[in-house]
Length: 254
Image (cartoon, rainbow, N blue to C red; front, side):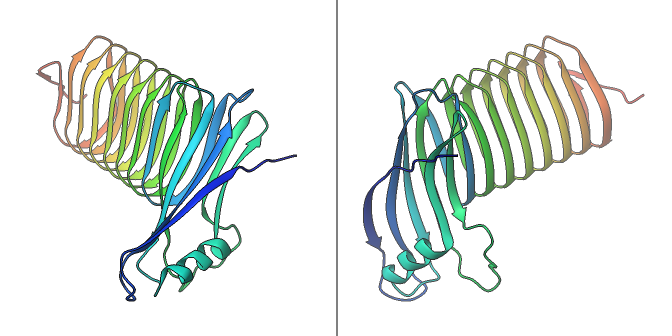
């Protein structure tokens, strides 16, 4: 399968010449999205910010940083040798990789973070496999599917269905025009203005939701559950511990 990678722009910034200080440099990628329906992202450690815009181009701005290298040249060399950073076409999708290279043994290796700021056409569908770090996504008309290891997740203004599979970290979701499905290990879940149904499987952490147009189903290990302004039906599969209130009333266990 033919893949085309477009890479442009590089700038350097070293905060200090001393080992143990933060060194970082920037790189950028871009790709025309003609005949592409979505983008898959395979990213490792670092922050991830995605915003939907008008147009037909994906733009990726990355800041690569580490405190584990003595100077910027060592960090750049390690990045080239140990990390993948590419934006390609793959079977009707764009494919972004920003992570450690496959097959490398990272025992005793130094840490490198890639912080990403990404603009995508707002009509695209997103499929994200993320290692760790905070994630923010907003203004997307397509669907969003997230498999995340750890770190807080914030989603706003999503026009289609959302699925989140998260290991740990808080989840804040607002203004969703589709259904919302969350499988969460631990961390607070806060929801507002969901125009579809909500299905949550949660290990631990409080759940606060309001302005839910569809049904609300939850399977919860521990932590309180508060649901306000629910228009659909409420279904509690299991609740290990913690209070449950729905539309201002306590929900009795059966």
